[in-house]
Image (cartoon, rainbow, N blue to C red; front, side, top):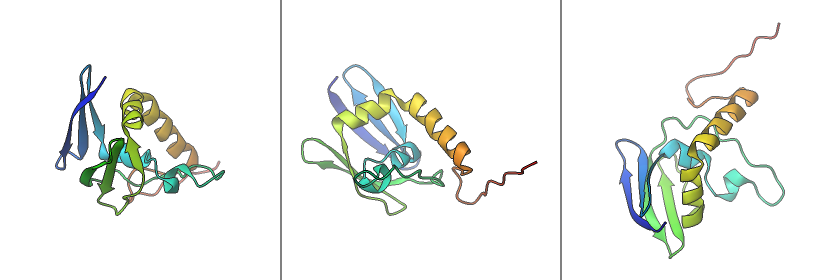
Length: 124
């Protein structure tokens, strides 16, 4: 399960991870909303932040962070948090479940993926 290749596709806004046993394509939006940064995961005992409005986010740059992971610079200015090799594999393997959970959290909070849209709930 060794990572063999990483390819950034700016035009398609995704990151290709090629392992010895599998390939995964992770969208920039998914990587951004599941950022390992303290800003997103929460500081100390504070709850994780629900990141919304990132449907158009892209990746400007990817670079190695020592021997243990990647630093990803997103085009919305977010550039903190190191994606460890283990965390990237976890995100890849749990992509479908994580994405569905994220969409449900957005719905429950009355938020959306598109920053140019507003969700209005009618009570009634």
